[in-house]
Image (tube, rainbow, N blue to C red; front, side):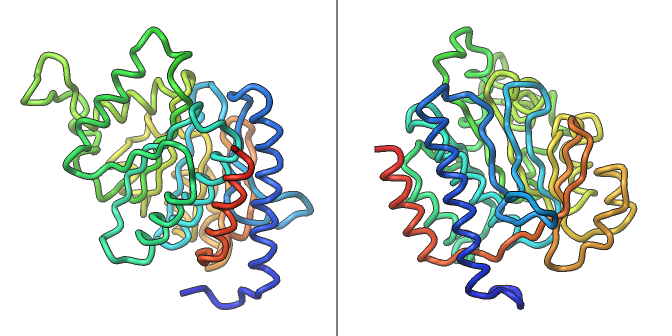
Length: 291
């Protein structure tokens, strides 16, 4: 269901912003693959500027955390971040690892599945059965000497709070099947967050509340997410996440983008879940752009 107040003109503007991202991406794909890709956050800034964008660089802290209890908007941000990043890399120079905790049959899950089909890049879908295997594989890639041969890697987690195996309290435990070499998924995730972004491994995660952020990441690891998006929440939770109570006055149709490295907070308007027409046009545009 779309929030009230979304006009057809605004939905057209939403895709216009994607096209702008794609044009930027087409220029970048002809140059160096690792030239600071930006993930559009599917929203218009409330000042006179382009759409809000999170820029990923090979430096510490270059991860994005999205916090709020609006599952639809969190999924929308995650999906359009995926699409806008895909426009900026040739197919073999980037890969996406997707952990989606949406239950089968839910609109958010079906939407993400349609977006995945529209993106021609490698997208590895992770579930509880292969979580340990995939996370340990990523941890092994992080330790490899030939990192220049590893594609830029974006780990997208939809609903971090639903992955109990990723809670930081298990950070130092080991896999019972291979205690000598395989760390558990929580430890692998912590390695990716703390060490990965400077080597081309970036985490984009959504989480419902600050309490769960604290339970799964902790204060120290939170500092490795220098880019954060907040939806409406209490003043105390907002202050814990961005050192300001601003997210307590957002209302239903606004969000905050916080950049800790650059020291600014930006208010923007996230869009509703895109429809099938948007996804079809995304597929066509990516096919043309990356052919």
